[in-house]
Image 1 (spheres, one colour):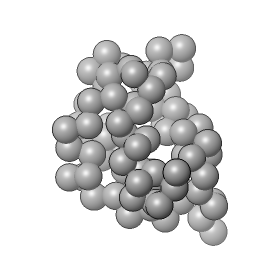
Image 2 (cartoon, helix red, strand yellow):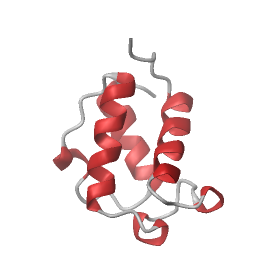
Image 3 (cartoon, helix red, strand yellow):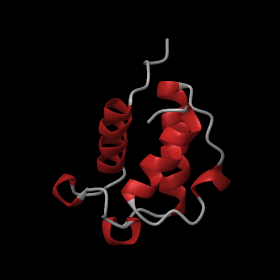
Image 4 (tube, helix red, strand yellow):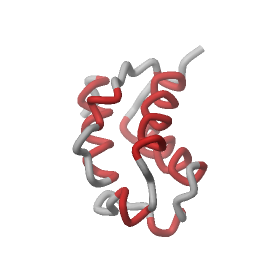
Length: 84
């Protein structure tokens, strides 16, 4: 059963997923760029799929195209889910 999404839960999940992809937890914040965190396009696809699986938020790979920071990704994910 999917977890009920809130912005805080989505943010916590995104951080954990980025750590699983190799990013250092201490470097993850809303203004951190994916380039700085060494998160590549395949990791971004994995992030989208993981969010979909955990929260049933339907992200398509193109939804995260051009997203440069963790904060931008959170905004896209939350907007897609209708979260504030």
